[in-house]
Length: 578
Image 1 (cartoon, rainbow, N blue to C red):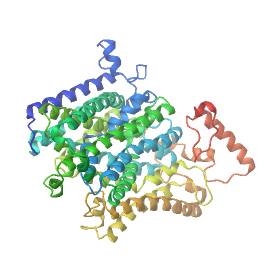
Image 2: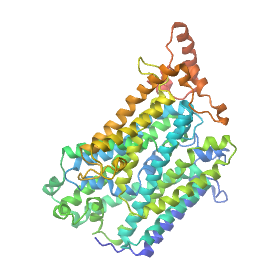
Image 3: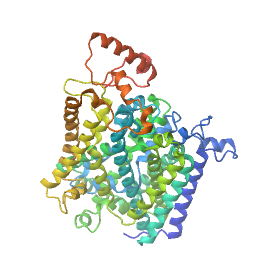
Image 4: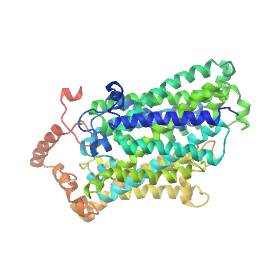
């Protein structure tokens, strides 16, 4: 597979696209105010007096409309890796339709879940920058640090995977596979995104996502027409039938993907930042719903392209003369050089949109604590971005399998997703006590132990910790019964053990178990204990307390933006429902 895009043309595409997005990012922070208002209005997310404030830099709070949230979720979630993901599913006949639909559903489903969870988290943590703040307010320091560690790990792996994917694609289309060339591409992406995210923060990411999402959608439509119209890519109905199947292996992969990606994306602080950035709860829900539909369609597109590629030359794929993860490029090869350049524009936009969102997500993790101790969170965020990107660029140069990288992060996230979000339960339901911090933390530990036990049971090569790589000798990295069972059992065990350890914690320590395990000097402003007392967390109501609790609930309903949570029942008006 030989493409003929010159290195000069590739560099021109890379730097022109990155410079364009950098200018948009600077415009989002008000650095281009001297330009005509028609141009500056395209760059600004919010033109009121909050621009330039720290809170706006870190959260863009209550400033993004439906289209901005939709395009932002779509663009930031779809990185350069999508040219490999569902394409590999589609070009592998043992997976085919169920694998493709599973990957597409898995990539879009987190937005649907956040439509439900997001309002509850936002209502409990109105001034938060990320779910680490929710963890601190609901539980305490130990869970905050646990959430932060998992989130940073996942976002770091995501950045490495993105940099790996785009350097591989540039190398493929230019024919230059040298390590130095790949590092040069990753450095350019990292430096430019750092420049505009450190100067303009989250608003820059959302503004650039609007343009990136539009560019990606337009290019996908153009590529669809070009690829399918090409005579060399024509296939018959019978040939396509050979490539399109419904299989048990595909179903196993689909189940694995839905669980894995959902668990991981709930620790993506870049996505959660959009929850607080939305103008309102209805806007947030509409935006995430539309973004979810867009993600599903683009993933299905690449999956079908994989099927077409396999149908065109099944013997080469069966004999491994061609690789399933490169199937899209097999269809791209017969097209003219101009189309290859368009693909470089596409992947550069995809990579930039994902990486800038992840960089902003990283800055949000400890922003509140930095403000408390008097540090400048903006400068601390800039230092953190540089510190994360340097090792990410180095790891990307090693060109590890992108999907394998994601699976490691997904499994780590699966160990803790239930302990974290069970924190939304603030009342006891029989034996299901509202989780304590110790109970939640031990639930996370139980998830990790479950993975290690799976490693022993499945005779993981190289030691039990190597099992996190899920090397199962199946037809793909995320296929097979062992991988699927691991992703089912791990969160299930952490779910059960969170309640078990909470029950034991309350038996031993009583109501003291509701207090944070660790309290730092500047945590006196944290009202975790007081909030639990006000909400009567973990207490049985008698009639007198029920009346008092109802009054508190109604007052909370007046101030909060979300109602109808199964964890915190509220009264809903017709206006709220609308």
